[in-house]
Length: 256
Figure 1: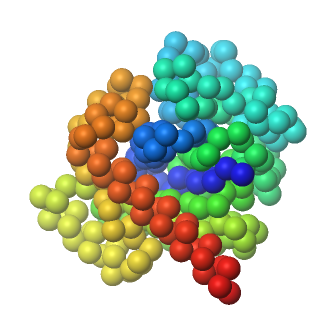
Figure 2: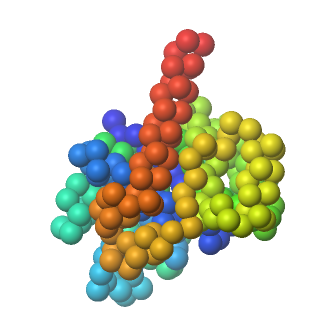
């Protein structure tokens, strides 16, 4: 059974797609297989990884997550990426719509080690809820900016709703992205976030670093673009911290 992780947050521009792709790279770096599920109608990951494919014209419902809503087996719609061995993609397109607000996708049946779902900046959408109802863990990227922090209560309300329907789902934490230690305002926002949410905030942050953008431009996860770089090292620590939290959660459930 695959481990299913969703990247979710109600605000746009906080690094969900970059984080999802980077985490997939961390999985590949451990010689494990990964499926990226693009559930964002912006189709950012799809357009990054399917170079030369028009998501508007060339992808129909049978080629995207909509196929799962209609009962197609996941191994019939996921596609392996020749440029990144071990990485598979379930693409999105701009007019992709999931209709069932309580849809459970069979993502854990994917023939890979890890599934990572990228979602739209709307935690109340049917697609995002489908990802949450089908996942074992959820990570919430957020910038250390007040406008980003203000949307977190909306995100947490959506996560609480999903957890009430999916007992296996655990919030793995808030991930501070694009962090610049030199900026006083960001340091203050990080302190506020940690005071407010405590251990729910991951210890590791991902830095404001050109390597993320450069990797995206090269259509690669940062782990594969520059394995020994500052960004790749941070992502590896994030992934390790997430896996520790998954293990801790399952240990506590068995003990309880």
